[in-house]
Amino acid sequence: MENKKIILAVDDMASNLRTIKVILEKTFDVRLAKSGQIALSVLAEEKVALILLDIQMPGMSGFEFIETVKKNPDTKDIPVIFITSHSDLELVREASKFGIKDYVLKPVTPEKLEKRVHAALNYTL
Image (cartoon, rainbow, N blue to C red):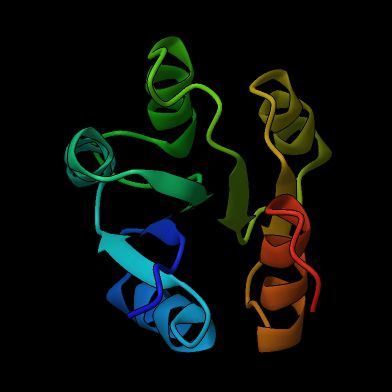
């Protein structure tokens, strides 16, 4: 059995998580989390190669989540791609302060998501 890289998708909408999983599961082992708290528990147990993160979530926002991730020496170097419906330039600037690898607007297309994920992980298609 081949060892696929683990991608953690964090979004409070189950439909968005399902879409991401369907698009990426042929190439990657996709873990899903409906909240920042669940995602943090996944990070504590799994060696994650990339995080796909929604910005606006109840409880813990994407920014709060990424701040926690970047403070932890074990997770600070994991690349993060924000996947969001917000196209506000101020949010893009804010995301860049956290060293976000990329920013994808919803709705995501399979081609766009695969291309961005592969670029973030230095894969070739």
